[in-house]
Every structure is written in structure tokens, then in C-alpha cells.
Image 1 (tube, rainbow, N blue to C red):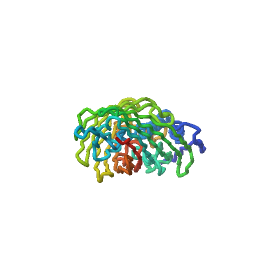
Image 2 (tube, rainbow, N blue to C red; image 1 turned 90 degrees about the horizontal axis):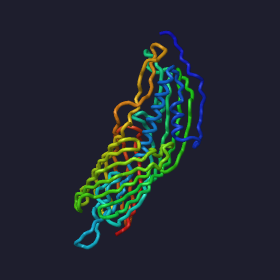
Image 3 (cartoon, rainbow, N blue to C red; image 1 turned 180 degrees about the horizontal axis):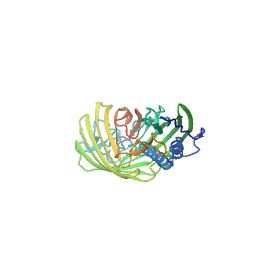
Image 4 (tube, rainbow, N blue to C red; image 1 turned 180 degrees about the vertical axis):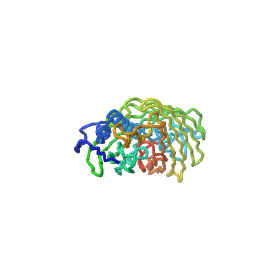
Length: 388
């Protein structure tokens, strides 16, 4: 094989200080700072921009459109005509993210907050931490490894405190609201390795804090009192989060939900299905949950939640011949494939610590590798219902 030398242009380490630019600009700086020479600048630019856009949408899907906790409080009531007073409608305290079809009861109100910590470690199955996420590379066809390659490392963490409230307007109608406050930390490096010699192309970090997209959810029960309940709900996500910092989708989103539940003694099951428009695009979601009152003050909960957002594709490496050098291929990243379905399982407990105070704790475990994923996401919450 003839000796062919491809030399990357001189590069210099660059650092963007925290808060100097928006998160969108930080991602663009990290992803689009091209160092590998392919002599096809249009394709390089298109691939880099597609990677940035895909990463941004995946982060928005994880931050701005993540399902919020159930707006219904743990204590629900209904009027007992035989006793002439209100009584508990359920022996357990309900699910976490799946919405129960039961309504709280006229005049019944609850409020609380939940705290979630997410440490994102992979994008569509590609590890973002180990330095092996290849964004572009050149490789001779008769060699096993690229001789000129760029690797991206990203550290993305969010801390979200969501304040929520719910009020029973009538026995059949509830109105709930959730207000997320998000802190997003992102840092990363982009390295170029040419024939074993590594150079720093880019290094940047950013921290931003602000309100996410506020969710408002009215819910109406369609069936009379009984063990089985069917309800309909509408969830509106208001564009209150800054989209330039990936805290919000940038436009209003609306979801229509169908809710069912069945209560039988200490056990209950729940099911949700929803379709939505606006925000990041059309979406379809589903959820199922089961709750069991282990004691009068402790409820065990398990859930399964999934969703599909139109246009949210996997990032995929594409290999093509080098435009100038025979026997060399170039690998780039592009979004490809059908819309991906993401899903996660939830397990946790709700504990009545006293009065109508509930302490909640659960963990989310992703069941697919679509989009940005964590190994596990912990949540803690407090919920208070005004006694009847």
C-alpha cells in the first residue's frame, strides 16, 4: 500500500466559560468543531449539524417533555349518602406518573413537590462518558482502526424540583398544575487522534437554571362512583422554559388522555393512553401501574410508561468512500430510522408519615436505549392533602 499522509489542520484547545453562552451554543461548539479532514465540507457540516440537532432534541425530550408526577393527590374522597359525609375512595395512595381516573372530590386540594436527579450517560446506546463516542473518522479499508478520528465526551446532569397542586372543582372535575424548576449542567471535550497523537479540539461547559414548561391538566370523571372509573384529561404544556438553554420546547404542547382505573380493597390497577401535538412534535404515550396497600400507611407501586415522539430518530454512523483518496472511507453520524419508542419502569413506595402527609420515593429504570438515557433516575417527593 502506498504511503498516504492525511494531516489535520492545526487545532488549539478552546474553552467556553460557564454561563458565557447558551446551552444550544455550547452543544454547537462541541459538536461542529470539525478537525478530521475529509474534503467534503458540505457533508461534514450537514452531519455535524444533524448530530447537534439530534442531541438537542433528545435532551429536550428528557428535560422539557418528561412525564410529570400524577397531579392527583394520594388521598381521594367521595360522598357516602348513607353516612352523610365524605370517605376515602381508595385504600392505597395511587401511582407516581400514571394518572389515576379517580378524582379528588369537591373542595379537596393537595400540593407538594418532587425532586429528580438525572445523570445522562448514553445517547442511543453510545456511551458519552468513556471517550469512545466517534463523531467522524477516516479509515483505510485494509486497516482495522481509523487513522484519523474524533471522539466526543459529554457530561450531562439535571436536577429538577417540580411543584404541583391539584384541586377538586366538583366531585367529577379536577384541575392540576405542575411547575418544574430545572438546573442543567453540561460539559464536554472533543478530541482528535491522528496516528496515535491526540489533540484537544474543544472544551466547554455551561450551567443554567430556570423554569421548565409548566403543565396544566384538567380531568373529568366520565363514570359514576364505583370500583371502576373512566376519565378524560387534557394536558397543556406552556412554553415557559427557555428553549435556547434546552429548558423548554419553545412552543405549546397539548395532549389528550384517556384514563381508566379499578380499585378493589387494598389493590388497584391503572391505565393511560395519550396523543399529543405541538412541542417537539406529535407524540403517542401509554402507561400502566399497579398499587397495593401493604399497610394502611404504606403503598407499594410499580409502573410502566412509554412514549413515541415523531421525528426523534436514532443517531447512526454512516460509512462512505472518501471523496479524494482511494481506499479510504469516512464515517459520519446522521439521524436515521423510524421514530423511536422510549420506555421506563418505575418502582417505589408512598408512606403516610402522619396526618395527610405522604413521603414518596421511587426509581426510574430505562427499558430501551433510545435517546439520552441514565442507568437509574431517583425521585423523592412530599405530598400534602387538605383533610376533609
